[in-house]
Image (cartoon, rainbow, N blue to C red):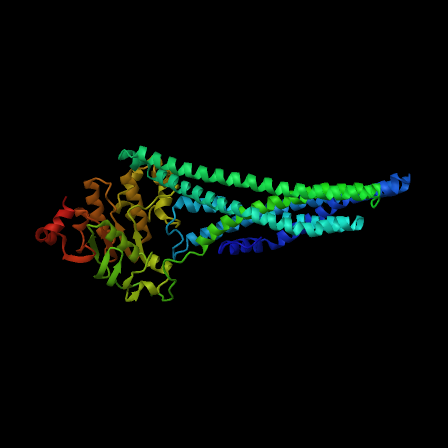
Length: 565
């Protein structure tokens, strides 16, 4: 049952191993419950033969007491086992979600490659819950098999043919059940894949709702989601039909099997091979067998769906990292400038660039893809295909990604805000006071934003800061980057949504605040570029110009066409 397409099987094994003590305890209790259930018709048969048939009151009381003890034990074991199995399933699902979260947040990256954020969320909810359900179902499966074994032994004591019928008939029945579950597994995987894709598309649409409204693309977005939703619904219906067919087929097989047992028992009774009590016990055991078989049907379906979900989770957990860990160590405090030596990655082609320590440098990339690829290399989200990026003479590829990002902070243009107060967004987990953040708030003009809010810096912001305008969000995001005070700060288009007067204020104050610390402004804003020490132009993937902003405006027509439009 645990074998699944790699790496799904390993995910199931890890989930079960993590809860092995609880699973073992629940399995023991469940086995005891099933054994007691199986013994109930046997004891009733004994009561008929030894008490009712003989008219012995003492025997009747004695065996009724045994029957009462059986019911007490099986009831207690069932309740306790159910509580343990439910808890085991929830704990296993939580563990899977923790593993997924750890892998997705790993600084080496790679887990989200080719996957929408909403799809990862769906895995952490639906798929993790299904893997947890497997952990909860396993004790039921073990208990069901134990119930079948006890029934077989009891029937062997009553009648050898009936006992052999169960012992020889159950293994083929289980094998057929496994074959029947395969289509359900495939369709469950397709169902979860489509559901995750639909969640990802929905998350993207919600995140870009303002933009969609602004460009009048709502009908196209609705059509896209409708198609995705219909595909997801079709996959869910196929999986539901497969589940119905699976359950019906398993129940039909077990029904036929139980009917055969009943017929054989009736034949033996007619031949005089069984007493009345033994016949009652045999019929009762045949009816009892329906319970374990129903449990096995349930367990088979849970494993089929769980294996599909485990395979999807395993793909994320075992995905390759985007960058290696690195073992080199930066000096403390960090010193030195940035150097790019023959860097090629994506749209970049053999970039050579020296950024002196403490300088304020503008980088102009007419091609947005080149700007994005440069930011990815500087933040070590990816390593260059060729060449190297160095900080203080140490290649970033030799450093741990966390160490790189503490020293080199890349503030992307589309940075999100948190659902917290403005102050908490700026200090991002630190305990810096409002007074200490004063220069940062002033440099980014976030103090003006705070004055316009009802509770100032203590005003709660909505999800992703949507309660603010686009320009206000940019200023808060810039303040957060400045508050981190890294050795090297790389900022991408921090003022595209603010007015020109505010942009000029930010440019002048940013220069003063970052004086003596290395800062790169990847932008085409003339206000920001005018305060830099130098400007580097990257066109067609290579450095085509390097100089002061006024000089480039005067001498380079292509530069003017980019920054002065």
